[in-house]
Amino acid sequence: MNTGSPSGISPLAFGLFLWERSHTMKLAIHGATGRMGLTIARLAHAAGDIELVGAGCAAADPAVGRDLGELAGLGTLGLVATSDQAAVLLGAEVVIDFSTASAVAGIAAAATRAGVALMSGTTNLDPVAQEALDRAAAVVPVLWAPNTSLGVQVLAELVEHAVRRLGPDYDAEIVEIHHKKKVDAPSGTARRLGQAIKAVRPESREVLGREGEVGARGTDELGMLAVRGGDVVGDHTVYLFGPGERLELAHRAHSRELFAHGALRAARWVLGKPSGRYAFRDVLGG
Picture 1 (cartoon, rainbow, N blue to C red):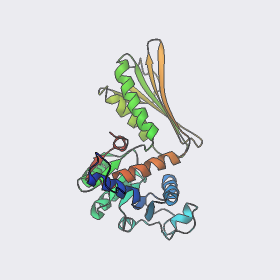
Picture 2: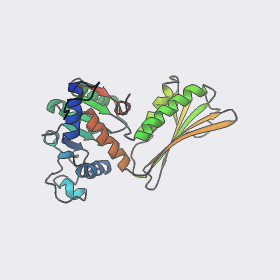
Picture 3: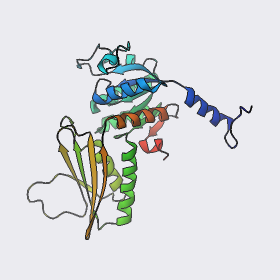
Picture 4: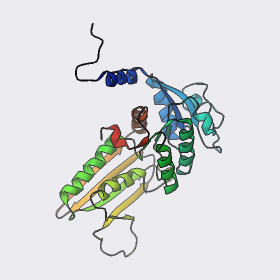
């Protein structure tokens, strides 16, 4: 029986393929006790090829010291939530971060010291956090994605294509809807879609809602409106208003699990990559 690599594939590439198929990924979660963290924990536990080795949370979190499995409804896993970032990364190959913007610099520095790949989905990062990711990327692979939905990535690509094809006569506006407990606005996804528009129209100026006599809409405006209420996981619509017609490009998230699935896919992808900064588009092939 032929056990060599298929024709046209190098032995090294085929060996890496086999390793990826058989390897058990040792995963830590930073922000493990939040909604996304617990969802990721449940999916990782059910995956079969992932070993959960660390659970990080804020020092003031009442879940500190509790078993992650009990918090996620999985029964006792013997994995205790802790604010000690070094302990969280002990034995990990990759860490998924869904925490807060102020906590990103700390986990990026800890991942650098531990030599652990970092996949962060934390949104609304300030320049300090972005610089921390840049520093980490000089040592370990770092993938930051303000949205880990495959559909949203494709939506961003469609938006950029549509704006380029339609031209400057079409006004772009973004409306996003989220549950009432979301603490930041506009959402990271809305800003990601805004970046897709700015890739074609770099002169675009974000206008976050409108009130009073603001005058006629400027040609450089990129309106963003954040709506909050109920338990909406996330809705995003990009409107392109032109002469006599309107184009709407939209994404509706039905379950938080879709982001967790995307985060796990990104973590698998970034593991083993060379040091550097990566984006979710890289996971889908560039």
